[in-house]
Length: 260
Image (cartoon, rainbow, N blue to C red; front, side):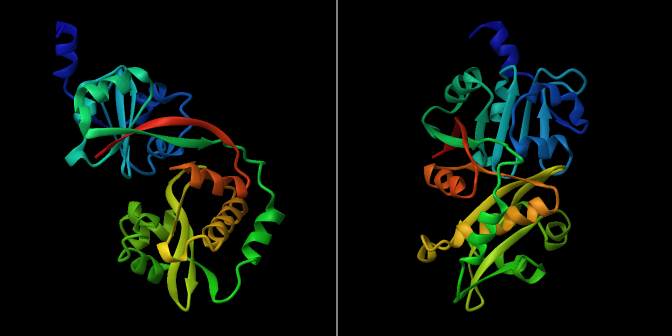
Protein backbone atom coordinates (compact mmCIF):
# COMPACT_ATOMS: atom_id res chain seq x y z
CA UNK A 1 0.00 0.00 0.00
CA UNK A 2 1.35 3.45 -0.92
CA UNK A 3 1.98 6.10 1.74
CA UNK A 4 -0.66 8.28 0.14
CA UNK A 5 -3.22 5.48 0.41
CA UNK A 6 -2.24 4.86 4.03
CA UNK A 7 -2.78 8.55 4.81
CA UNK A 8 -6.26 8.45 3.27
CA UNK A 9 -7.28 5.39 5.27
CA UNK A 10 -6.04 6.91 8.53
CA UNK A 11 -7.74 10.26 8.07
CA UNK A 12 -10.13 11.50 10.75
CA UNK A 13 -13.72 12.26 9.82
CA UNK A 14 -15.95 14.91 11.28
CA UNK A 15 -19.68 15.47 11.53
CA UNK A 16 -20.65 18.45 9.41
CA UNK A 17 -22.97 21.15 10.75
CA UNK A 18 -22.38 23.81 8.09
CA UNK A 19 -23.62 21.98 5.00
CA UNK A 20 -22.49 24.81 2.71
CA UNK A 21 -18.94 23.51 3.04
CA UNK A 22 -19.78 20.17 1.40
CA UNK A 23 -22.37 21.41 -1.12
CA UNK A 24 -19.77 21.90 -3.92
CA UNK A 25 -18.78 18.23 -3.66
CA UNK A 26 -22.37 17.25 -4.52
CA UNK A 27 -22.89 19.84 -7.28
CA UNK A 28 -24.77 18.36 -10.24
CA UNK A 29 -25.92 15.27 -8.32
CA UNK A 30 -29.69 15.51 -8.78
CA UNK A 31 -30.82 13.40 -5.86
CA UNK A 32 -33.45 14.88 -3.56
CA UNK A 33 -32.21 12.94 -0.53
CA UNK A 34 -28.90 14.77 -0.88
CA UNK A 35 -30.81 18.06 -1.11
CA UNK A 36 -32.71 17.11 2.07
CA UNK A 37 -29.45 17.05 3.98
CA UNK A 38 -27.94 20.12 2.32
CA UNK A 39 -31.15 21.99 3.15
CA UNK A 40 -30.84 20.92 6.81
CA UNK A 41 -34.17 19.11 6.63
CA UNK A 42 -33.12 15.52 7.29
CA UNK A 43 -30.04 13.36 7.52
CA UNK A 44 -26.49 13.80 8.77
CA UNK A 45 -23.24 14.59 6.98
CA UNK A 46 -19.57 13.74 7.53
CA UNK A 47 -16.39 15.01 5.90
CA UNK A 48 -12.60 14.75 6.09
CA UNK A 49 -12.29 18.43 7.02
CA UNK A 50 -14.76 20.96 8.40
CA UNK A 51 -13.41 24.03 6.60
CA UNK A 52 -12.14 22.75 3.25
CA UNK A 53 -13.48 19.21 2.80
CA UNK A 54 -12.28 17.11 -0.10
CA UNK A 55 -14.51 14.13 0.70
CA UNK A 56 -17.99 13.86 2.14
CA UNK A 57 -20.71 11.42 3.13
CA UNK A 58 -24.41 12.12 3.52
CA UNK A 59 -26.48 9.57 5.44
CA UNK A 60 -30.24 9.79 5.19
CA UNK A 61 -32.67 6.98 5.86
CA UNK A 62 -30.89 3.75 4.88
CA UNK A 63 -28.64 5.41 2.28
CA UNK A 64 -25.06 6.68 2.30
CA UNK A 65 -24.04 9.09 -0.50
CA UNK A 66 -20.27 9.32 -1.02
CA UNK A 67 -18.78 12.29 -2.88
CA UNK A 68 -15.52 14.09 -3.64
CA UNK A 69 -12.16 12.37 -3.38
CA UNK A 70 -12.22 8.73 -2.32
CA UNK A 71 -11.91 8.39 1.44
CA UNK A 72 -11.83 4.93 2.98
CA UNK A 73 -12.75 6.16 6.45
CA UNK A 74 -16.02 7.51 5.09
CA UNK A 75 -16.69 4.20 3.36
CA UNK A 76 -16.13 2.45 6.68
CA UNK A 77 -18.43 4.91 8.44
CA UNK A 78 -21.31 2.47 7.98
CA UNK A 79 -22.82 1.67 11.37
CA UNK A 80 -23.46 -2.08 11.68
CA UNK A 81 -23.51 -2.27 7.88
CA UNK A 82 -26.82 -0.43 7.96
CA UNK A 83 -26.65 1.72 4.84
CA UNK A 84 -26.76 1.08 1.12
CA UNK A 85 -23.80 2.95 -0.36
CA UNK A 86 -24.29 5.16 -3.41
CA UNK A 87 -20.99 6.19 -5.01
CA UNK A 88 -20.52 9.40 -6.96
CA UNK A 89 -18.20 7.81 -9.52
CA UNK A 90 -16.33 4.59 -10.48
CA UNK A 91 -13.43 5.48 -8.18
CA UNK A 92 -15.73 5.29 -5.16
CA UNK A 93 -17.20 2.03 -6.52
CA UNK A 94 -13.77 0.46 -6.73
CA UNK A 95 -12.94 1.57 -3.18
CA UNK A 96 -16.22 0.16 -1.81
CA UNK A 97 -15.47 -3.25 -3.34
CA UNK A 98 -11.88 -3.11 -2.06
CA UNK A 99 -13.18 -2.38 1.43
CA UNK A 100 -16.06 -4.84 1.71
CA UNK A 101 -15.49 -7.44 -1.01
CA UNK A 102 -18.19 -10.11 -1.12
CA UNK A 103 -20.05 -8.52 1.77
CA UNK A 104 -21.61 -6.10 -0.71
CA UNK A 105 -23.63 -6.66 -3.85
CA UNK A 106 -23.91 -4.18 -6.70
CA UNK A 107 -27.39 -3.49 -8.01
CA UNK A 108 -28.87 -0.81 -10.20
CA UNK A 109 -31.48 1.82 -9.38
CA UNK A 110 -33.34 3.96 -11.88
CA UNK A 111 -33.60 7.74 -11.70
CA UNK A 112 -36.44 9.63 -13.40
CA UNK A 113 -36.24 13.06 -14.96
CA UNK A 114 -37.18 15.91 -12.65
CA UNK A 115 -39.69 17.67 -14.87
CA UNK A 116 -41.99 19.99 -12.96
CA UNK A 117 -44.39 20.46 -15.86
CA UNK A 118 -44.61 16.79 -16.91
CA UNK A 119 -47.73 15.79 -15.01
CA UNK A 120 -51.20 15.48 -16.53
CA UNK A 121 -53.38 16.42 -13.58
CA UNK A 122 -56.58 15.33 -15.32
CA UNK A 123 -55.13 11.87 -15.89
CA UNK A 124 -53.91 11.68 -12.30
CA UNK A 125 -57.36 12.63 -11.02
CA UNK A 126 -58.88 9.96 -13.26
CA UNK A 127 -56.56 7.37 -11.68
CA UNK A 128 -57.60 8.47 -8.19
CA UNK A 129 -61.27 8.33 -9.14
CA UNK A 130 -60.89 4.83 -10.57
CA UNK A 131 -60.38 3.41 -7.08
CA UNK A 132 -63.70 1.89 -6.02
CA UNK A 133 -65.15 0.03 -3.05
CA UNK A 134 -64.09 -1.70 -0.91
CA UNK A 135 -61.07 0.63 -1.12
CA UNK A 136 -60.85 4.24 0.04
CA UNK A 137 -58.02 6.77 0.23
CA UNK A 138 -57.21 8.72 3.37
CA UNK A 139 -54.49 11.20 4.30
CA UNK A 140 -52.04 9.93 6.92
CA UNK A 141 -52.99 11.48 10.26
CA UNK A 142 -51.69 10.89 13.77
CA UNK A 143 -53.70 7.71 14.24
CA UNK A 144 -52.69 6.24 10.88
CA UNK A 145 -49.05 7.19 11.51
CA UNK A 146 -49.09 5.20 14.73
CA UNK A 147 -50.66 2.22 13.00
CA UNK A 148 -48.21 2.37 10.08
CA UNK A 149 -45.28 2.24 12.46
CA UNK A 150 -46.49 -1.15 13.77
CA UNK A 151 -46.71 -2.74 10.29
CA UNK A 152 -43.45 -4.17 8.94
CA UNK A 153 -44.23 -3.77 5.24
CA UNK A 154 -45.54 -0.20 5.70
CA UNK A 155 -43.04 1.33 8.17
CA UNK A 156 -40.92 2.94 5.46
CA UNK A 157 -43.84 5.24 4.69
CA UNK A 158 -43.16 7.14 7.94
CA UNK A 159 -40.07 5.75 9.66
CA UNK A 160 -37.68 8.56 8.69
CA UNK A 161 -39.67 11.08 10.75
CA UNK A 162 -39.46 9.38 14.12
CA UNK A 163 -42.78 10.59 15.49
CA UNK A 164 -46.19 11.70 14.26
CA UNK A 165 -45.64 15.33 15.25
CA UNK A 166 -42.72 15.70 12.88
CA UNK A 167 -44.44 13.77 10.10
CA UNK A 168 -47.55 15.94 10.32
CA UNK A 169 -45.34 19.05 10.23
CA UNK A 170 -42.92 18.07 7.46
CA UNK A 171 -44.28 14.92 5.82
CA UNK A 172 -47.20 14.04 3.60
CA UNK A 173 -48.91 10.84 2.57
CA UNK A 174 -52.02 8.80 1.80
CA UNK A 175 -53.06 5.23 2.43
CA UNK A 176 -55.54 2.92 0.78
CA UNK A 177 -57.92 1.35 3.30
CA UNK A 178 -59.95 -1.83 2.89
CA UNK A 179 -62.64 -2.15 5.51
CA UNK A 180 -60.56 0.14 7.71
CA UNK A 181 -57.35 -1.83 7.25
CA UNK A 182 -54.23 -0.31 5.65
CA UNK A 183 -53.37 -2.19 2.46
CA UNK A 184 -51.22 0.31 0.53
CA UNK A 185 -49.74 3.77 0.83
CA UNK A 186 -47.70 6.54 -0.75
CA UNK A 187 -45.81 9.12 1.28
CA UNK A 188 -42.84 11.43 1.52
CA UNK A 189 -39.94 9.11 2.29
CA UNK A 190 -37.86 12.26 2.74
CA UNK A 191 -38.48 15.95 2.19
CA UNK A 192 -36.45 18.98 1.19
CA UNK A 193 -37.25 22.67 0.82
CA UNK A 194 -38.90 22.30 -2.59
CA UNK A 195 -40.40 18.83 -2.56
CA UNK A 196 -40.37 15.21 -1.45
CA UNK A 197 -39.02 11.80 -2.40
CA UNK A 198 -41.90 9.35 -2.87
CA UNK A 199 -42.18 6.02 -1.05
CA UNK A 200 -44.86 3.55 -2.16
CA UNK A 201 -45.70 0.23 -0.51
CA UNK A 202 -48.48 -2.33 -0.94
CA UNK A 203 -49.31 -5.37 1.15
CA UNK A 204 -48.30 -8.50 -0.76
CA UNK A 205 -51.80 -9.97 -1.05
CA UNK A 206 -53.22 -6.67 -2.37
CA UNK A 207 -50.75 -6.04 -5.17
CA UNK A 208 -51.65 -5.55 -8.85
CA UNK A 209 -55.01 -4.01 -8.03
CA UNK A 210 -54.13 -0.41 -8.83
CA UNK A 211 -53.69 0.61 -5.20
CA UNK A 212 -50.11 1.88 -5.52
CA UNK A 213 -51.09 3.75 -8.66
CA UNK A 214 -54.04 5.46 -6.96
CA UNK A 215 -52.05 6.33 -3.83
CA UNK A 216 -49.21 7.68 -5.95
CA UNK A 217 -51.54 9.78 -8.11
CA UNK A 218 -53.20 11.25 -5.02
CA UNK A 219 -49.86 12.14 -3.46
CA UNK A 220 -48.57 13.76 -6.65
CA UNK A 221 -51.71 15.87 -6.97
CA UNK A 222 -51.39 17.02 -3.39
CA UNK A 223 -47.73 17.93 -3.92
CA UNK A 224 -48.55 19.93 -7.03
CA UNK A 225 -51.30 21.79 -5.19
CA UNK A 226 -48.72 22.79 -2.55
CA UNK A 227 -46.04 23.80 -5.02
CA UNK A 228 -43.85 20.81 -4.13
CA UNK A 229 -42.02 18.52 -6.53
CA UNK A 230 -42.83 14.80 -6.07
CA UNK A 231 -39.55 13.10 -6.99
CA UNK A 232 -39.51 9.41 -7.92
CA UNK A 233 -36.38 7.25 -7.78
CA UNK A 234 -37.11 3.63 -8.73
CA UNK A 235 -35.73 0.71 -6.73
CA UNK A 236 -36.37 -1.71 -9.61
CA UNK A 237 -37.87 -1.87 -13.10
CA UNK A 238 -41.33 -2.60 -11.70
CA UNK A 239 -41.20 0.68 -9.79
CA UNK A 240 -39.93 2.43 -12.92
CA UNK A 241 -42.85 1.02 -14.91
CA UNK A 242 -45.31 2.25 -12.28
CA UNK A 243 -43.75 5.72 -12.37
CA UNK A 244 -44.24 5.92 -16.14
CA UNK A 245 -48.00 5.44 -15.68
CA UNK A 246 -47.98 8.50 -13.45
CA UNK A 247 -46.11 10.73 -15.91
CA UNK A 248 -42.44 10.23 -15.07
CA UNK A 249 -39.78 9.64 -17.71
CA UNK A 250 -36.67 7.52 -17.28
CA UNK A 251 -33.44 9.45 -16.86
CA UNK A 252 -30.61 7.03 -16.07
CA UNK A 253 -29.59 3.99 -14.09
CA UNK A 254 -26.96 4.16 -11.38
CA UNK A 255 -25.24 1.69 -9.04
CA UNK A 256 -25.79 1.08 -5.35
CA UNK A 257 -23.95 -1.31 -3.07
CA UNK A 258 -26.04 -3.31 -0.61
CA UNK A 259 -24.80 -5.50 2.22
CA UNK A 260 -25.75 -9.14 1.79
